[in-house]
Amino acid sequence: MKASFTLCALVALQHVSATALSKRQDFTKIQYPPGTEANLPQYPPGTGANLPQYPPGTRQNHPLVCSDTGNSIIPFISTFHVLVTPDQVVNGSTNPTFTGGLPGAQATYDFGINADLDLICYNIKLTGFRGEYQSPAKTATHVHKGAKGKNGPPRLAFPNPMGTGKIRVSVGCLQSPFTTGLIVNGQDTGTGFKARQIQDNPSGFFADVHSSLAVPGAARRQFPG
Image (cartoon, rainbow, N blue to C red; front, side, top):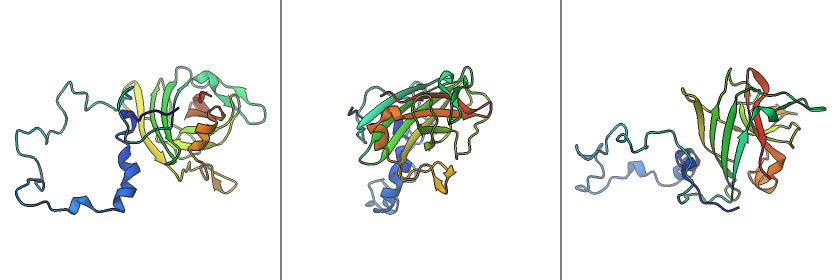
């Protein structure tokens, strides 16, 4: 399903585009003609452009929240909404059994995929989490390859949701080459992964998050097929 890019990943576009921009002209060293005021270290007093934060009520200082409308800098070829819950967590590989996960934990994963750019953007909101993040991978927030009721290796590792309130949030984009930090048979489990694989077979992947109180998984759910 083709979808327009929402506000979910605007904050994260910096690190996606930074590499490409660094290979082009360094605009920070351009000196504009005298009198244009474009070289001022800050804008004149009273313009409001130097405020440490936006005025109350503008919502500009809030954690980034998905919008259902808006145009895209990056056109998503497909989007997915995944609600992970404790009842979907399994343990073991030969005869997996449902563990019950971490009672009360729940998260929404909103993904946008551009297969041509091999790019996946994410907005993850986690509630009811307890304990510490724990995983042999570099983070404890993943997309794994595996069917429902089965386990499989993580193919994507996202920054763990953070926050001091009831809701922890992680927003950004990942672009290939992907790594998880988990080495199996001498190779990172993200090696060779392409974002297109989720798009082509979404039900063959699941999202999850791991806690020290529920190491096999605090909550999990398959991508909708």
